[in-house]
Length: 88
Image (cartoon, rainbow, N blue to C red; front, top):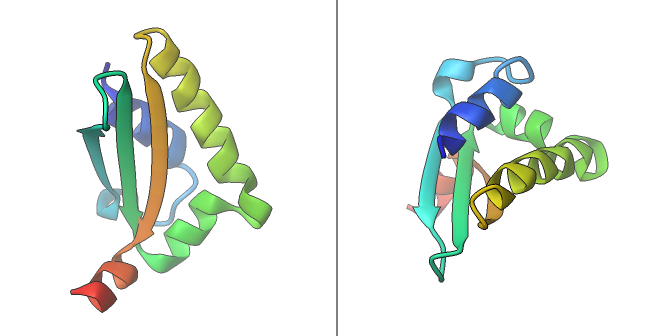
């Protein structure tokens, strides 16, 4: 399944700069797990998480439903580019 395309369809209208969004899809600990990391600028990351996490939870629910069609459990993680610079 093209999780990257699904996520871009969902989030491009939410963020200020859709071209700067980095989406990485990795296999999880088992072959039934999928880890999706969405990295964005700090302001866009805040938009994707939303007030009290409401947007993030909605995104998790949608991609989770998409994953069920392949019998996969999808984990969605949000990161800010600025967070990555601190750890570097």
